[in-house]
Length: 229
Image 1 (cartoon, rainbow, N blue to C red):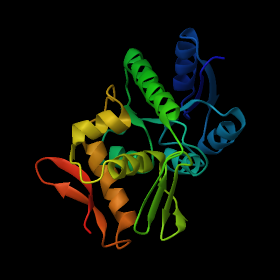
Image 2 (image 1 turned 90 degrees about the vertical axis):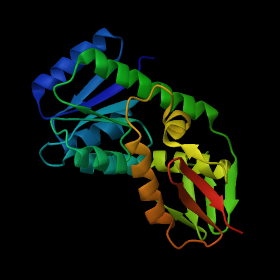
Image 3 (image 1 turned 30 degrees about the vertical axis):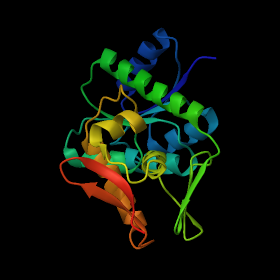
């Protein structure tokens, strides 16, 4: 079965271009022209990856990404004419897997699609039933579930994977590049700011949960899940 892509963009020319190009590479491609249509298409089509524009009518890409992350961990690559750091950071915080700025080179975009799909498929193959438990926290990689004080907490898939990896290797310091390698994959095309963004969001969720562990910054090196008692 061909890999299914969903393109959500209000620019018909972009939709047609991506459809023609990726179908020539063997993908099955569906398109949607606005955010509402994009959410509906995602639920009906169940794509393997979404190429998502930001500035769209009815629902923008930020809201579409939020709604996708509420129901699925399928990869999302955001495509936009905006290149400011704020847009990239917000996209990563919402759970996007990569970020491409228009105008883009089709070969580069294709490489990013393949890299994100490889990471997602590899991570799916490696998931097991292990559940990590410390004081007031429980992390299930298999269920993609985080519980704090016994209650489930919404968390984007990449944040959970990062937390699971650090907690699995508690008291061990990892550089940003090592975390990119272990969590995002060695062929990830982003930069180390991705790690900082996800750590920041995790700390907001974990603040005050326990005095027996924390996410610690080791200045000049990286991060670790530190057991304090």
